[in-house]
Length: 339
Image (cartoon, rainbow, N blue to C red):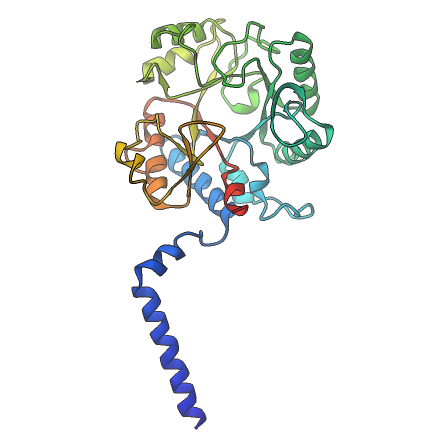
């Protein structure tokens, strides 16, 4: 009787297993959640981007922005070491609003001091990165207030961060102030940089053509640029990037390309018109704060192919001879954790 009961149970289990494997609906639901968790899936994505790029250029620089807590499996890991494989795949981390630009509700508040408790949270996380020998690129949103700009540079320098005081949240202009710690040194690796310019949405008034954009940047002495792959809807070429790698004073600088990996943008080359009415499985809701930006299920193979497969976003960046990538919307994992 026991043997017969066991046989029935085994039969039912095998039947259920076969049913699940052959049921497309269940297969699709299983694909909704990455193999481990959302943080691990994001770490794996960044590692994949890094490994793919470094097959071509071993010195390729990878800098994820925000979401520093992705390096841990949860937010209560004070005594746990960060994911070392993730740290080995990157050269630094970008962090917005450490000292200026955020209010107590984590909302945008340009020109406003970020509350001390929130600032400390960010500093504590960033300090783990610096302790591991990684650079921190800090972006404060100070508006054009000279005293706040000076204060931002001073506070970030005291923490050992490389900083940029943005006078506009949309990162559309070259600030009128001189680069902080301007120097005539050659910058061949991220840790050499003493300042940087973050300019990914150049306005049409100041930069009406691609050539105007390149010429304006050539006339600066920033150690590092974080810019977009495109200017005036034209992709920057290896020749363009070669020009940008030389500071006005003749020294070498780094040119890093911005790339969002946690959101899809409907103004990018990869966007397909049919997605507006028939979105792919990886596409989620529009970001209410940034029109045309859509959260993505970043662990889906189709999205990762767009970012770092053949003829991908990453391959175009490498072909243009950028020194590295600046990866945005790393904190997309929080969106899915909160769902």
